Length: 123
Image (cartoon, rainbow, N blue to C red):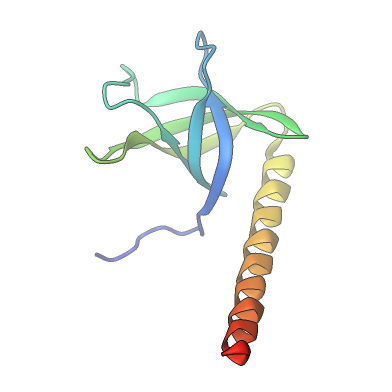
């Protein structure tokens, strides 16, 4: 299957909060223009345009308007959301968070290369 995404996705441990819902839902991954929120398979919205907030630890909640692009799969239900707008002028904060995720991803890849080389040299 050909990957059609324009932006790299990063795995996360964030939570998404919907209006009138106290429980946060896990966010599996994020990109500059999208998120995947893990939800029960019967979790649906009447409209495709939604509002939610993503809580970034040590920063705060980022209010997001998005378009539900898909509802996941039977084995992995959730909401694939295309970000339409970051509210309250917080788009630069979201951009910095995504940039930080990129640096963390690079650090993880470098760490794994070094550990693999070290492990091979010990054999």
